[in-house]
Image 1: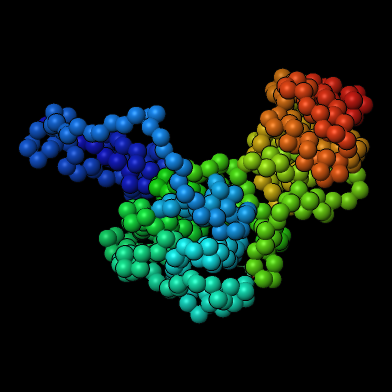
Image 2: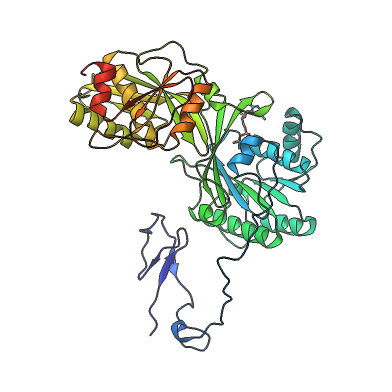
Amino acid sequence: MAKKSFSCSACGASFSKWSGRCEGCGEWNTISEDAGLSAGPSGKSLGQKRGSRIQLTDLAAEETPPPRTRCGLDELDRVLGGGLVPASAILVGGDPGIGKSTLLLQAAAKFAQSGLKTIYVSGEEASAQVRMRAQRLGLGQAPVQLAAETNLRDILTTLEAERPQLVIIDSIQTMWSDNVDSAPGSVSQVRSAAHELTTFAKRKGISVVMVGHVTKEGQIAGPRVVEHMVDTVLYFEGERGHQFRILRAVKNRFGAADEIGVFEMTGSGLSEVINPSALFLSERGEAAAGSVVFAGIEGTRPVLVEMQALVAPSPHSQPRRTVVGWDGGRLAMILAVLEARCGIPFTGLDVYLNVAGGMKISEPAADLAVAAALLSAREDVALPADSVIFGEISLSGALRPAPQTENRLKEAQKLGFSAAIAPSGGKSVSVNGLSLRQVSDLTGFVGEFFGAG
Ligand code: TYD
Ligand code: MG
């Protein structure tokens, strides 16, 4: 008898027996028996049935890169990898109210003005509302076709007849497919709607951009499989109280992941920020204890950001460790290295770390900047205000050179900094007008800038 197999409809993991909760992704009630896969029509098991031969091609064959359309919003074009690739599927995630609809309406208008036939389908707002927003953004005359619709079958039929080159779906959670019984917004509806849309769009050569809401945990609501289905996943991030917005590529089959685009939310929509470093540093005052400037790389661009730390005696038995814009685990590691290798303990002290401007940093090269901010706050000693700092810290307390040192230094010089603190080793680089102070380990760094610690 053929062996039964089961698989999870959310993440695709397969199992030999049924269970209520998928061990792969943790979803409930998504595991079902795989139907009819174990035996072919002839009753023979699939393993013995012969398939037809597939065509193989040379890896070395010439292939031209896909033609791309640039919309003219450079920050968006760059995050897409240099423009929109035809028949690509893109998912844009972000918190409610962060500005996804605004961004995509502006993008739709720009792409339409660049010559792409564009349709904007809103499942959340009436056409009149979208039209009013367009007028407020000064895009009232853009040649974009609008629809307010949630029925996926009707949408696909319309796309079939209209044959646009770009369609925006705002949002995937509001779409419902009559192939699935469950309610709009449910996991299976989102998955099915995203699947139908992307396969249809690929077949017809239409690019599709889907908006996806984000859950409290920060993931695009609905199953992970939606992220696997599309070519590009972008997150639109920012703090509500701040005007900066960051569009970040977390997956891109047609360009670099980790690329960011920076925007500013204004009364008349999103405007591009051509020089993010200047913006992130604009609120910075005099040299202050606990504040350092990190010279980072985001995607293909250098970006300078201010790192702020506050260290204070804790009234709690378990001192606080609060991080905004950086990884909490990594902070714990830096604190442990400072204690174990340099003999500087943070026991009994609350530690707060903040990346100014609402940026999120994930680069290991930020380690040394974080350590510097923490030490500066703890010792109440300000680092020179004209210096930037970067470098990775290893568990042994050694410092590792960061990639793209030259780009970091050039950006610092361009923004008026005259010194940089960086690990020694690696390629030797020099930038006119910038003095480079190299340190080989954390103990040496502490000794040089904070006395013996
Ligand atoms: P929206 O694009 O509707 O967010 P989302 O689709 O992600 O839910 O943006 C909502 C916010 O943006 C709203 O609070 C008002 C603000 N906004 C501006 O500040 N300026 C503008 O020109 C527009 C259109 C919106
Ligand atoms: Mg919206």
